[in-house]
Amino acid sequence: MKNPPWPLELRKPIIVEEIRKGISPHQRNKHIETEITIEIISERERRLEIIADFLDRRYPTNDEEWLRLLIALCRFWDIPAFQIAMVRPRGPGATKIWIEQKHCELFADVQSVVANGLSETAACKFIASNSKQYGLRYSLPKHASVEKWRKTLNRQYVTAKRKIINDHTFRRLFFSDDTGTDVQYGPEFIARAIIQYAYARKSSSGKFA
Image 1: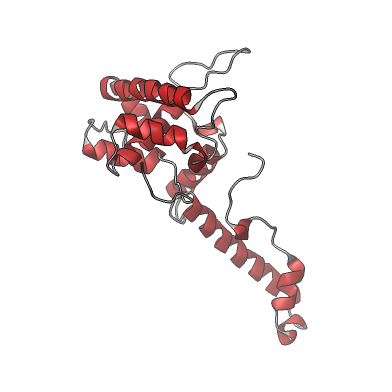
Image 2 (image 1 turned 135 degrees about the vertical axis):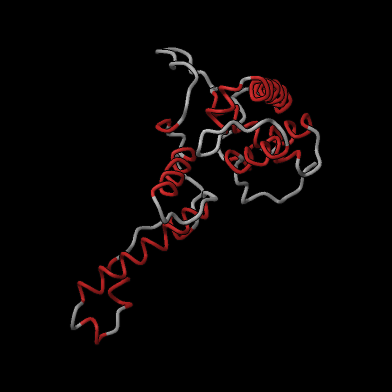
């Protein structure tokens, strides 16, 4: 992603000169290097909190939360390090777009729109027509119309939903809780899927039509 939509505070480095100017003359003459180090650590922690909030995660305080934040960060950048695949990826050649991770994301995004009153079919149309609200997840393919993309999303959503309902192994791998317990398909499962995979459309106007 060439220009990620990071918050403004994250779009520039920590500037030592600015920190130095912010330290009082009294402290500057005594332990300037120590004060600068303390301020850098404090600023890093503040920025980490911004990143966690941007990715809809809590500020990490233990190993498990650090892992969840790292997974969310890799998911945002589409780094496959923590993705789970049912089969070994294919070798050189055409890239398979609709991998398991993408199906989980599409299911969650559709259900997130459905929760606002639209049908599943209408939700697919909304996503196809408002793909920019979802970052690079559903970028309109070159030479494809919105209508054709809507049909593709709807078809892939049906595939994802069928897989989620009928494939217990798939559901356990991609949607189970930390204990590995399978969650049966239903309202609780859908709510968890939205939290786990739905895109945070922070720039959305909130209108579904």
